[in-house]
Image 1: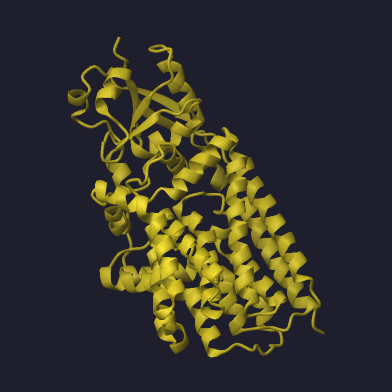
Image 2: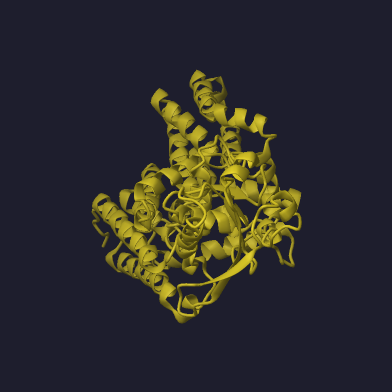
Length: 491
């Protein structure tokens, strides 16, 4: 017997449960924020029109939330779940364009099979910031193609510009959007539509300040985006495009497993036309396929987190391929599987293997910041103005200062264009290095972990480097050793 379900009420109950669970879990488990979040906050506090790795929007937003939270990490985790709720809302709304409300709800909940949408959803970074934007853009893209309303075109253009300012990866969504417009005779008329060019114009105006910044800074973040796949250590024994397929399969296997109760249910017929079917394929796999083509052409190895926004609509594709008639037994089993998965993910941080791990959740970042403030007070009554050294170590401690100093990443003016070395020499600074490479998560940070050979030629008045030991906040209490040198302010 078909199940009558208040899908709308259940959807908002799902959002509420998601926010509560995935705000509490990192708040109770983590001693400090994820290193990507801390890097974003540290850069965002400089309020530039761009940064060495990415455009500025996600950095600014993270910095603003940090100022609002004032060292209360739960506020930042709550904000992250707010972004996830926006993503779920647009998955739900697009699903309702093709499916009955109950099936659209199932398609939305299926994303719980993706770790980026639950366990990793607290981690604010340019990848996770894309989730609500990509979901909303895909929804409004469908709306403009089917209703052609001026309002939807304006929203689509604004969201597209903002998404580009989060991460250039938006281009991997834009390409299949343009290909889809060329695919159907109906959508090819889009290129003759004045609203299409209005949307493009709005997007261009939004990204214009960043484009001017790019020109002034030799397109440095574009260069990083083109080479980011090579910046991570890689030991894969198979070609990049094969590794990409393997990683994608691993990411998706749990989503398909959660749908098991419905594979055995009786199927229903959906009234979905050819255009709608093609759009579902585009929404589910467009950016993923575009990236795969790039891996074939370039040989790059793509780390899994770069696929964060790719599979928001995989549930829509699965449900549209195997649309069940909802019954109480299948729905109960589905909810039990989802609940079991979430319980396992909630428990993992408290297992001995995780408590004894080298996770960045337990790094002593607040204690390092407090110690540096204390030793700086011996040299000046003013707050520490600058801090330089290993990129991730510097960015991991800056947000925990009472008055955050300006970061001097890698002692490089290219990485830190807000730094003027003459001012730094006058006002003084502290330099820190990650000699154990516990703050090294890519090739660049591993190479710069130690004090550079020419350090004392560049800063002859700096004190000799001294090692200081801190301890992780997990059960193993592993030591964390950093080297500290001080450049006192000029009297």
